[in-house]
Length: 308
Image 1: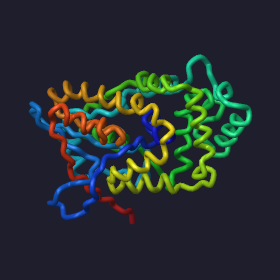
Image 2: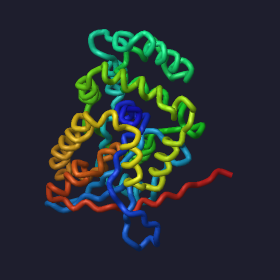
Image 3: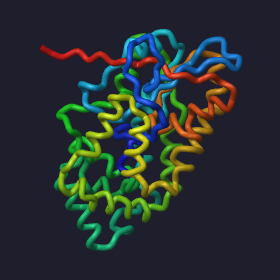
Image 4: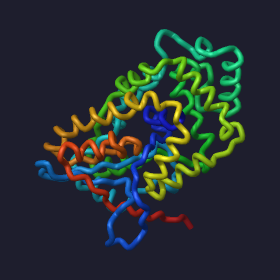
């Protein structure tokens, strides 16, 4: 659950990978592992690009490759899952996170489980007071704990890094969905089920022991752009939401591709969405290929500058 909820709070990862071989050879050899993909053909006058983001990562790793910078400079518009440059949209996000009908966690859990969740959030010093969090959709409430679980002092979202670069290049920023649409997806998952998954999340040995091995592994896989490994980690950690993948991933992927078919004919786009939406049989990459587009990986080699 933790990994999915980031799609809506832009604070965690929604990562499901595709099978690719690891290849770290010379620059002029075939690109295999990459988060950056080129979309062309099928009547497009100019290529568009697809990039898999991670919604929370250590600042030292939140860098853009030279090829990614060039894509931002050359494209006409940048699309995220939601319009992150729309202040009205972002300010309205808080109200969309609340459960309908004045429901609270106390209504959904036994007294003992409710107390367990309450104490856990207080012990973790979550970003918002528990009195507010307990009115949130449970799948979202857990994501406020991300900062305390990060294996580094500073963290940021890749979307923020991309948006800053896009603004510097004076690119228009838009969204494939609205916060209202995203909140609606979560409302279709029973709140009680979400609350039970929250309890399981808290009961997990990884969180109870303060062990960040899973998160560290996911960050490392993202740094290596190893989508196959990310897929494996996601399956291991988020099996609880497997019944809702159509709602959370596949239906949204299909809707985005339908929208992109029109948008890409008019302009060259950079589409930056959670990496979990890119791969797989029902992922955006494969759906675009089925529509007749040529989708190929672009070398996305990162060069981090160390401070002296």
